[in-house]
Amino acid sequence: MSDISPPPLVPREGWHVMHLFYQVDHAQWALFSNEEKRQAKTHLTELVQEIRATADTQLLSFSIASPKADLGFVLLTPDLHVANAFEKRLSLSLGPEILSPVYSYLSQTESSEYTATREQHIAEILIGEKGLTAETPEFDAALAEFDARMAHYTQYRLYPTLPDWPVVCFYPMSKRRNGSDNWYSLDFEARRHLMAGHARVGRTYAGRILQLITGSSGLDEYEWGVTLLAKNTSDVKAIVYEMRFDEVSARYADFGDFYIGMQLPLDQLFRRICL
Ligand code: 76R
Image (tube, rainbow, N blue to C red; front, side, top):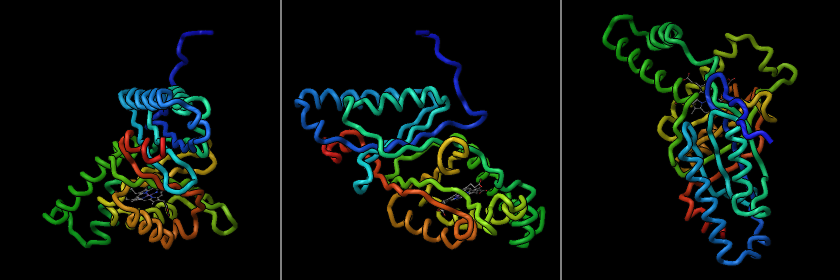
């Protein structure tokens, strides 16, 4: 066996992202002595601390609503080898037969080909839509606002810092390829125009919904993972409902299963899932 680490598998830009959902086997857990239970929880706690102390790595941990799953993690880290090693250790962290994977998703953070450029924003929004005139104070203020938002946004899409907001919603989605509703046969301008409408709806949820859109074409079953962080479930329900009316979602989106989790500190999480 070679002890030389394999060369890192790091995306050209962005990070790898793994969503991991487990069910607890309570029949196996009940066979543990109190001491074994304590050791198992300490083991998982230490592993979570090790992962969170790794450079450029984040780990969200949450309890999942409904019997679809018990425990969920979202792991963000550049190198797929590192993600893979952590994921295998997380699965075994409470003992060999305690956590059974019920769902997982592999994706990468990515920048979007539809992000508005400065020139497009000036021509289409500031002049076209808002009727502003270049080099007026209103125009300059609106442009400065755009520049600030975009500086934050492009960095955020590739290298997000996820807050500890209590509600985590995850679902995978693809763009439809079905007869006349084929997203991939639309030309770029048509797709860009539709995505601009999508972004307009999305921006009305600023401060209430934090969306992490991660690409998974060729990596997993759907084309994107959608992770929404929120402070309450009403905002999740409202944005998903409102976007269903937006043409991009109404006509061109197919969705997978939905999972709702609640971020909790580990000691509370253990109590919640009856460990
Ligand atoms: O401002 C910008 O230019 C960024 C605009 C933007 C892009 C490019 C944006 C904004 N999204 C983009 C891309 Mn989104 N998003 C989803 C879903 O349930 C559904 O109907 C869809 C799931 C939600 C809830 C959501 C929220 N978005 C994408 C893509 C990639 C498409 C591609 O590349 O073809 C997908 C799959 C997708 C899906 N989106 C926003 C939001 C929110 C809240 C925003 C506003 C973000 C902000 O400006 O802070």
